[in-house]
Image 1 (tube, rainbow, N blue to C red):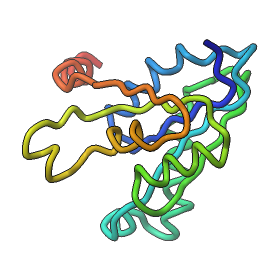
Image 2: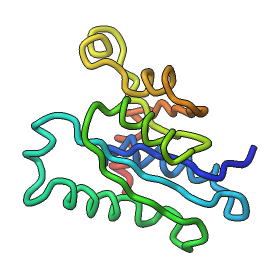
Image 3: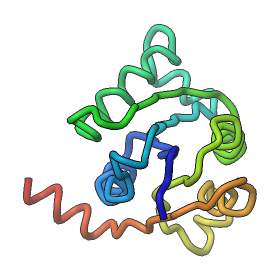
Length: 149
């Protein structure tokens, strides 16, 4: 299956970085026209994390975060920052930009952690207007990879 517009929601975490590495395999330069990277500022604490204008600061960090993705420039790369509830904003963005696929990491929380924090990926899967590929990233593998670097 070929995808013309792929959306990668990112939160600047190791999970998201690993998802980008795996998800890059879905991008075919002769078919994929655009790859979108979306960061959603959600809570007031999110705004306090950034100095100056949070929207500008976050956009710069996302640009650095995804710099290696599509390094040859064969696919148009678009970066966006939105404010609001992450799953809602991801679904709205994907619909507005007519994305063919959303690729996102899931943190794999279960039990009380899942109940309290909810699952952005789960809500996106339920409400998106296009297919969603979720990748459960193994945190033990991430720790091992970080130590090896």
